[in-house]
Length: 244
Image 1 (cartoon, helix red, strand yellow):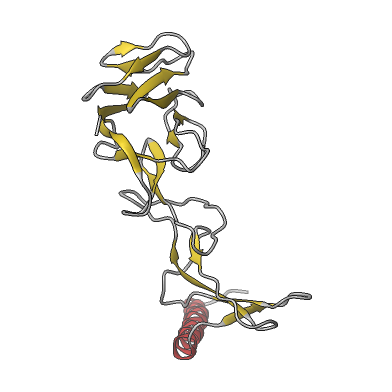
Image 2 (cartoon, one colour):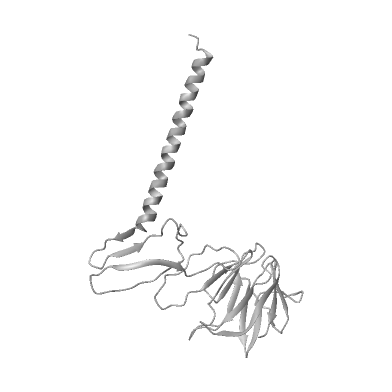
């Protein structure tokens, strides 16, 4: 049976009209849902618990940042027994500095000082907000590589904690480790330790030793007592040491 050209055109027009109608209906439904959410505000998600006060989370509204990362502040307010425990999402405890950061942070406890996570192209480290923790003398300024301009300050340790600072490709504790995201850097690459208000740099890499002023610290545990303006090379990163 032959189908005329006119019939084919009619069938095509009907199909196109149906597709356009479906897309328009879907768009209108989505727009109506967004307007209803905007008019009524953010929904409250209540999580029931057994034998304890329930947890309530304020979900972010569609007009806000959208997805909520793991490392966001959860400020906790406790009321009378059997009352609801409201945990609003109120902003990040670890911010992006210079470059966007997606980092998993530890559990937030009320009253604790949140650390800023600095994530560059080749290094990652923590630093406290201004005026919250005490610094030790000296700092490292990145003067070579893709992260030139960053500064690594030395945070005073807590009571009983070692002031040593390690460098390497593996992850480490906040303020006590600088992660170097370089393939030529060992998992544990170097260590800074303080001796009578001066910093000693010790090489810990067997394959790619640290260079100080262009000279390699050959051998594991070979060290150098740093002086002002010393240049330190670890992989593609070049640091300049400032004694204060």
